[in-house]
Image 1 (cartoon, helix red, strand yellow):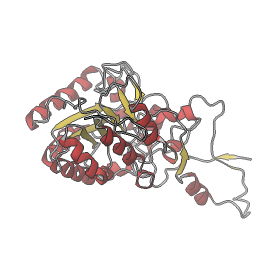
Image 2 (cartoon, one colour):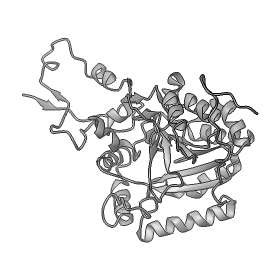
Image 3 (cartoon, rainbow, N blue to C red):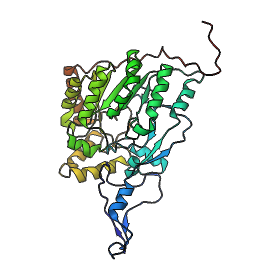
Image 4 (tube, rainbow, N blue to C red):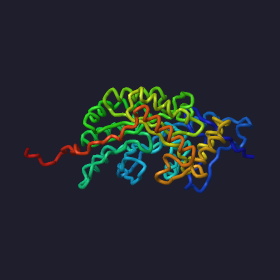
Length: 367
């Protein structure tokens, strides 16, 4: 007889299960065939789970590195993501379903099987030199975090920034990691020329809640410290109070924005929780384990904001939602940023300084 083993939360990981992606023909589940119960040696469930939770880094062999979009919901048309998957393990991450395209689960696989684009700096330099390339701000880390823990050793993000600096190309970074401070030696001079800005994501000020929602990300206080140090170094900083999860962290919206202002942020934004594809089930699992008393309430409010479903993917409303609750949240946000002075117009980034640096074999300039 084979018993199906329940999914168990793993220390340092965000999701509970590792359910397969939407493209797979077969489902996977953990089972016990009775071998261990029969007293035989050779199987240790705790060791098995520890192995399953170990981080793997694989090579991404992409032939290009700049991704383009035409979304009206964001203020950039191109982005670079040095990594696929994200070790931060944020249970709510809207990028999780993209792991299904690689044949992996948007659950545990997304945070443990990571792909590193080690050729990204070289590919970027090649693309920036292409005839007809027109510079516009590049968003760094728009899908998965460019400063997730493996960046400490991979250093791909730093390599990308070095290329952008050398080409005098504008860049906006989106991260929740204090590791961004490591690259202040590049970012501060670029910011002085209007070529760099940083957005720091802060989901909650509650350290215990943050540990459950985003287990391998920096603590809320360390992120606020990063905002302060970036601002003091002259790097424009905005704070994303995101995602706002109804009946879970939504009461913190004003508090997060106020803390960001005190730390030196000059803009504040928010995004309502999005649950595309497999993420809906993963989030519900998390809610029923960690906040069972509020799970139904949270899910009900999400549906009220998404026309009765768990997700609404239409441009124009997917970031803010619809319905009474979403309207009230947006009204609170507008009042808070106006009161705090965080409602500045979006920064303009300089594109007129773009200059490909000389390379071996180039003809020397006469003047």
